[in-house]
Amino acid sequence: RSNAVTVVPILTKLQKDCATPLPVLRHVADAMAADMRAGLAVDGGSDLKMILSYVDSLPTGNEKGLFYALDLGGTNFRVLRVQLGGKDERVVATEFEQMSIPQELMFGTSEELFDFIASGLAKFAQEEGGKFHLPHGRKREIGFTFSFPVKQTSIDSGILMKWTKGFAVSGTAGRDVVACLNEAMERLGLDMRVSALVNDTVGTLAGARYWDDDVMVAVILGTGTNACYVERTDAIPKLQGQNSTSGRTIINTEWGAFSNGLPLTEFDRDMDAKSVNPGEQIFEKTISGMYLGEIVRRVLLKMAEAGALFGESVPENLCTPFVLRTPDISAMQQDTSQDLEAVESILYNVAGVKSNLSMRKIIMDVCDTIVKRGGRLAGAGIVGILQKMEEDSKGLIFGKRTVVAMDGGLYEHYPQYRRYLQDAVTELLGWEISKNVVIEHSKDGSGIGAALLAATNSQYE
Ligand code: ADP
Image: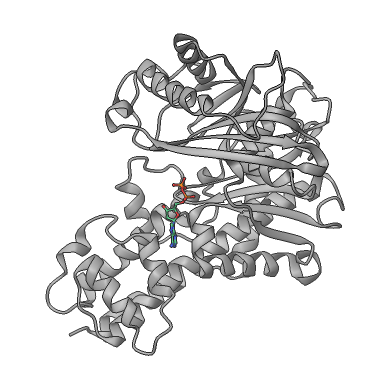
């Protein structure tokens, strides 16, 4: 039977180590703002890369014509077309298709992978009809969302620094990924052109901005996390005077790499040490969907080993990294029944453990502690970005309505996380200012966003 005398102190220590009272949140927000500034000063000046997107004109709603988007961010790729009708007609029609990348292509050559993508795109483009119409004499233009680390060199070119997320394709690292795609299209005789290469966060901002001029920040909270925002070019010293005509550009913060002043525990340190990228992406490891369930599993394992939470023996499944996924802890937290029946069955199905009510209550407290810390720190990060913007443009952020566009499975499907995030923003900004800061879900905006950026960067305009 579980031993409350030894389990409860583990829970109490966890709650203390994970606590995010206002001073901690404030410190994180201030540190985020300071790190952003350092990353804008010089390349390599901070944990935050503050990557230039070369997107300096944002969608206005006036865009017209047929545009394509191609999204490669993981094991699936998506293609999309949109017919834009300008201010009045807006989105006349869209169609999309999702295709999965065969496992062997993730370990093949660059040519094989890009040939596969180009042929998927060609097939999709062939089916164009109905409401979609390309003016005579024009090429089909593509917004290419490519969610791997890229050193962008212009709006339509960027060098792949390294593959991540399980890809190990030979021959692409160090090359311009737009050129790789263009060459594959040429080999196929497909006459399309990439007009914009965009990060998925940047696509989300563009997609949300199309509908709402007050969108200034976009945040993705899914398997991983990232954020981007609209910056003034005169506030980017590392640009060294290469100002855009609009005077503004989108900066991709790569904020997952932030690490300053976070309340971390022994469980975070152990998880990080065992990860494929120890010492990197610490903010991401504390707040994003890939890791929340795993942190909870590590706490429960310690409670089982040191506190006999599940009786004499330690449940075998609980020793397997990542068996407890964030959707599992989210499902447990939606259980409002008296005897926590859903919690019982999830624990049994996932970890093979039988639990009594008092054990289940402790486990719920563990989930809540980890999710509360994640949501509140994400909120502090957002306030850090807003604070940085406000410092450079007094009254232009906090004096008016400002929208933060959110996307990603974690934000979309985890109501408690969302609430904790909003609470932290309200606590930090105070009631008056936070009334004007609208944190809004912008679902799957990044696909259309990329097509919109192909439109704003069209070679024909
Ligand atoms: P990705 O970030 O992998 O491109 P998504 O934005 O769809 O894709 O996010 C997927 C992630 O969202 C999952 O890895 C998981 O962490 C989280 N997630 C999915 N469903 C839920 C859920 N029901 N509750 C909590 N988190 C979820």
